[in-house]
Image (tube, rainbow, N blue to C red):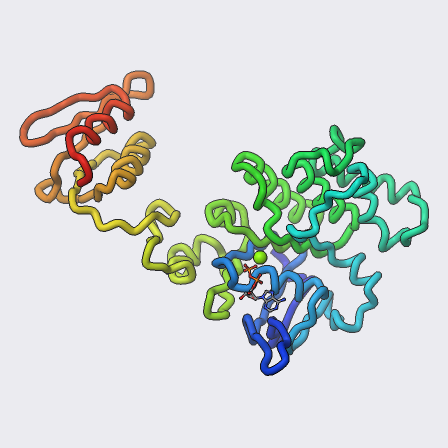
Length: 341
Ligand code: ADP
Ligand code: MG
């Protein structure tokens, strides 16, 4: 991607000015959000994601340092010009008032039309485009208060899109959505960033989705560090694991996800590598087993054979082999045979 920073910072400190002493959340941040890239901002609760988003949008003053919007200091840009360039979607400002969805989206045009200005043909065109982009045409005429969380979320994104800004900052826009809707929204935002050349920053708790969809990750740590890199690079070099490290969860590099840290006392040998073995492994881990590469260390071993239509789990235990034709039967057997390993 050609480097075309829309929003950049140097020696930025973010936090809160308190009476005695500033509360610094992170300092010396050197960040650049490029045109057409989709960056996901991750970090534990309270690490400062919302503070960073509010600061980058100009809603909150930095404690120190510079923020540049296309090379001009953000602080020197008039609010209306700023609103044309940066659109923000904050979870806490998701609308609930008495207004229909179309009017809500049209608020995104105010930097252009002013509060009392009517909508020009171009404004209307842009609103239609934004509603279509998030697939919200079907409920545009309904009252915002009567929409589902997911529909409201789409409307607030459409409002931001109607604004025609080149920078979009979204604070946890997927928080209230179910998994299919979260995947849909992430995929949509990524596509918009690329197609419309928007510099898009989105904070989320969805590590898995961020790893799959983001062009780059920014991870805020509890220690006020901000780690940047490609998702796969951070996963492989251990920085992702370190950022979320905690005594109760463990990063599983092979699976690309975190799992609860339990010390298994019984082990299973399972040499197969297929979709069924992935889910069998998850069942075993959930039941408190470890997976071992050494057959001699294992309490029993599982061989997976057959095909999707007639799968087989062959369990060998002390020279006896039992065969199960479903994972349900296998789990039932493990639970009744080995209570609480
Ligand atoms: P995140 O969005 O990652 O959960 P926040 O940016 O909301 O984190 O918060 C970062 C830190 O700033 C937290 O310790 C929080 O308590 C603190 N904080 C948030 N808002 C304020 C405020 N208005 N005044 C002082 N501290 C605040
Ligand atoms: Mg937050």
